[in-house]
Amino acid sequence: MGGPWVDHPSWEVVEEASAAAERDLSHLLLHAPIEELTQTENAQLATTVMSLVVLDAVERIGLTPAACAGHSLGEYTALVASGALGFEDGIRLVVARGEAMARAGEEAPGTMAALLGIADDDAEAACMRAEGDVWVANYNAPGQVVIAGTPEAVARAGELAKALGAKRVMPIQVSGAFHTPLMQGARADLRKALAEVTFLTPEVRVVANVDAHVHDDPAEWPGLLSAQLCSPVRWRQTLETFAGLGLTSLVELGPGGVLSGLAKRSLPEIQSLAVSKPEDLDTLMDQIGAAGTWRAEPALHQGEHLYMSERVVVSPSSGIFSPEVSLSAPGTGLLPGTDVDPDGPSSAVDVGDLVGRVGVSEVRTPFAGQVIRWLAADGERVQDGQPLVWLRVPDAR
Image 1 (cartoon, rainbow, N blue to C red):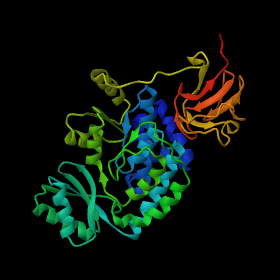
Image 2: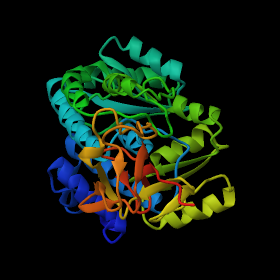
Image 3: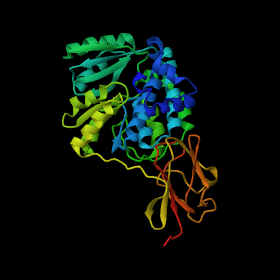
């Protein structure tokens, strides 16, 4: 599934993700046989990396979202897209999540099945009447629910669902009963990984799987992601939350187009599009032009002036941003939008001073002044021309 993107500039994301995961992800995306690719830990990592490749490609054409959400695993990509989670931290968490879920699937074997043409209440009733370990795992769209549990209980619930009006019961080839209590064994390992990363205040709204609510407090996300392992994905409710926020278009980023299809069923009034190949970017731009409701962020270049006494230092390339340690001393802050004490001992810079790195490229300020705000966070993947540091400079008049 990586083939269409090999010659696109955003393929460099794969190299950065390989370094973070300490794995050859090019092999996984281009050459791995299906038996290897569909192993839980590999499938999760491959899907996330391809979604981040597409995200990078969309950001390169200057588009920014008004809100983000992801279905199950996709919630990690949504958090990276929103600025709440650094790129490398996102990759490491997905590695930990995939490995933990694979182990939990071996310890508590389970399966999943999609129920088509059935109401949510009837799907829940089928699970309860099955008298076994089976639960609703995904509320995907009106008339589409996924159940999960032990193979025997899922089979019984499927038969009961048919009796309650389900038109089809479709087994799903997975290695575990995801989003059910049978994944409890994965939570301890994921919690350890979550404790090792820093969550930031999202730059745009992010809707969580667990409750379909917007969460802007970074302290809430470790608990939400841990709970997500054993809780149903409320995707239909998430789309309803999007509609309540006034959104009129939805773009699915990554391999496949299942989510945009679900959106068309759930909210036909919202325009939906899947971007999974480079040529889809042209379709996206055409849709944006027709809708007239999207915003593009113009690229800034060295010496961008905000006011007479303020300047921004911008990224010279795309890659992972790491700030200069001497400017990130306690009290200076690194959260996007966090003010820095202009009189602090570490906030002054002179022309040519190093303010950070983007990948291996040094970022040096063309201005002297005081750091008053960081506009990118440590570990965030930034684009060429993206503002990194906001400075107050002597009045040049």
